[in-house]
Amino acid sequence: MRYPAYLEKKFNFPGFYRVKLALPSMGLPDPASDLGSQLAKALEPSNIKSGQTVAVGVGSRGMNEIAHLVAQICRSIKDKGAHPVIIPAMGSHGSATPEGQEKTLAKLGVTSDFCGAPIVCQMDAVEVGRVFDDVPVYFSKNAMEADHSICINRIKPHTKFKGDVESGLYKMLVVGMGKHTGALTYHNFALKYGFHKLLKAMGDTIIEQTNLCLGIGVVEDAYDRVMKIEVIPAAQISAREPDLLILAKAHFPSLPYKQLDLLVVRQIGKEISGSGMDPNVTGKTFDFMEDDFSQSLYAKRLVVLDLSANTAGNAIGLGNADIITEKVFEGMDYQSTLMNALTSMSLRKAAIPVRLPSEEKAVQAGFQTIGPMPPEKVRAVIIRDTMHTTDFLASEALGPETQKLSCLKEMTPFRLSFTSCGDLIAPGP
Image (cartoon, rainbow, N blue to C red; front, side, top):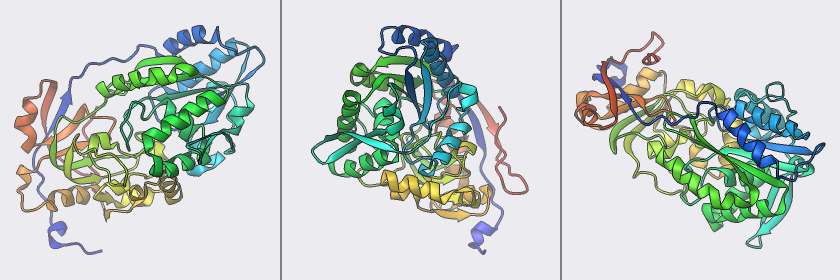
């Protein structure tokens, strides 16, 4: 394939700095132990009795220590003499198939052997109520067949909308435990009633009408370490989740700049963000009825270099980029990506951007398609992904601004280099 002459030529990239920020580290020393202590207290007064079955809803989010946390939930249930059963709670992820969803959990380390509980993956959902007269509310049939249900999820800002509950337990109940049917129903009717309003109404119905007994909210710090776990009785989720969301937003990863010419994201993936790359970090989103995220960051060009290993080919979010590599395109499981886009009504996120043959050419195109600007003047940042924003590369044009950051820990010169195949050679640990 031929490219414009400026792309065919060798490009002299400007100097960069490797920037490390020093933000408060709030991680718990032993999250699973903390969870176990809370569960011992929460399960004691619960209605869970010996011999009963407890469904544990587990999603596709790659929260830190997720496998250990799920294993601890299963141990605590067994300590009560009850029987845990793991239910994939992830809507359309894993191509909305039982096999795909079990594989998605396995990539996160959540397996029957490790967690000590069977995984039941059927996609059937039952209607448990209606809201606004015309919106059916669904819940996993397998979960409803159990005596009790528990769900666990990371609480964080949502990638579509803003409200007092966003991406957390309410979303897990409606979109996750609702299985593919519930996820499709929610996203479809949200275009009529609004994402936040409908989420609250459907979530409240699930809390009132199902066998849900506990929700477990997890908040991570800026280094993606579990900083807080809260075991919440079902009836108190509506009161507690907003407070946990405020805490999550205060520690959410972000870049210390407002205006960039170029943002390069080395990998995107479903375990990183429901949108592959979080618009709360990139500032980029395009679908209708999505809130504006550009106040967090504005970047003229956005380049994506690769897919994460754990995304299993789901490349949702690539459509929010301007440029991708052939590696991203070839590694995409289009069926999984399309299913995710159609279910969430986020069609743009599955669109195919401009494709270039290597990471080097993709980054080069990012520099050379923003107008007549000398490379040394381009404000460019390269991040691993949108969960990791405390260790990144910043171009020399950002040097003076970066030096003034109060949270700056380290700033060392770095020259971009690429392998013979054109892959970016990233800085070491």
